[in-house]
Image 1 (tube, rainbow, N blue to C red):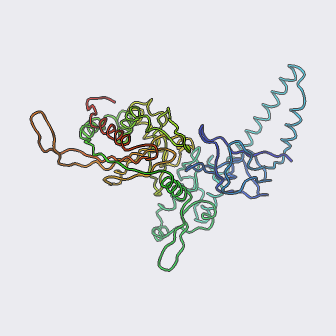
Image 2: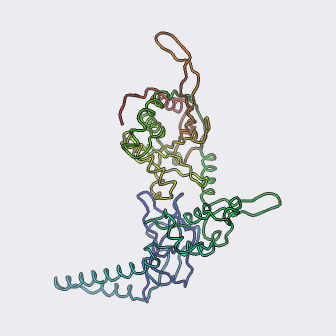
Length: 440
């Protein structure tokens, strides 16, 4: 019998560890090629680790909620072949000459091609080449979803694989009398509750008790920790966005036609933030004990609301190296992949400053909580038309202007009011002095 190590895979440049969420297999369970063995999480991104071989789960080295470093062995899979013994024998036998070397290479290539053919054959278990995890199959079986219906579901996982969230979202929107009747009722499914982080409602008298999802627990812990660690102060500034609104309205249709995507106010505000950070680099820092870490790279996190009500913060890396077009494409790409559940673990790591658009939900302003270990976060409210005093060389008059409130929450341990206020004022300056003749 052969034994193959299942290791924690590398998931990004800045990701060194992951948390075991749920073992999909128990010791002794049979495992097929590419079948999910365990679900893991890094920060707010969930992933699945499949098996590269067929066999059975022989040994597990970590429990659920354990944090495991990349490259560590998390389990042993026992196969019917003698792969480990064969490899050991091959590695201890010296290759005496070039002829033996060539023969060894041919033998390895033959074994590789044979293994690849077996894997390809194992993957074809449906009418199409789609692979469905045991969890997805169990949900489909319990909800009476046929194979034909299952294969029509659009997958958001790797290689368009259907994930548990995909099938659950499908069930919510499926147009059937049973689902219409249950649309406003909580989803109850024992198998789902045991294997993922869906809300698990329980009735208690007249109140509904809802268990937090894993992501919501992480957000709660992170926000509470930030408030307890940092001395939060918030400053406000009202900014005239009229020139920017006029410019965007004049180019958005041509831009969409040319680039096949929209240009929003987010990349424009982020551009102003980056310019201000270059002027005030001590806002682009983090705190480690009594040490201040000054970051050379400007990595802007953009808070993104998900359809389930949770929040995730993908990061635009090296934002100071991108022009407005590059920032626009990065914003749209990260937002799209965040909402589709296709972010990589590295996409949410390494942020040095965060921007959040509270105006997208109609809020006039907000007092955001700092995203640790950063020391500042800027929020933009909704852009509103307001009567304002306009100063001209011919005198003052009342005009209709597009105004927005910016709010900057900063860590008063290391950022004083002078720095925080000056930085916020500089962001406002770059927005109000926007050149509406510029091209993109």
